[in-house]
Length: 111
View 1 (spheres, rainbow, N blue to C red):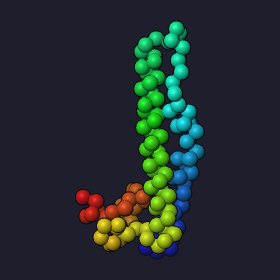
View 2 (cartoon, rainbow, N blue to C red):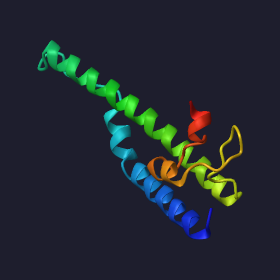
View 3 (cartoon, helix red, strand yellow):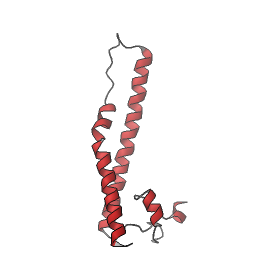
View 4 (cartoon, rainbow, N blue to C red):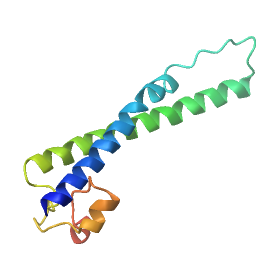
């Protein structure tokens, strides 16, 4: 992989990380414990709030996993291992990396 490609993927990963980190406060707030006044909020509203909380928790977990994958991809760039399949060691197609720069396997090994 060329230096220009590596720089482009590094920038893409850093931008993606920045985006995830900038929205982390909102995810944290929406996944906090639901506090509702039992007298003024009906049962359906409480259920909606609990469902929203569950969705927010799932989104938070997904974002944390993506941040770990991004950090791992950035480490592979620093170690000159980015773009190599972890299974067979062959280069991962750059078009595949453009779609998901955190992918670890070539298309053959991913199956």
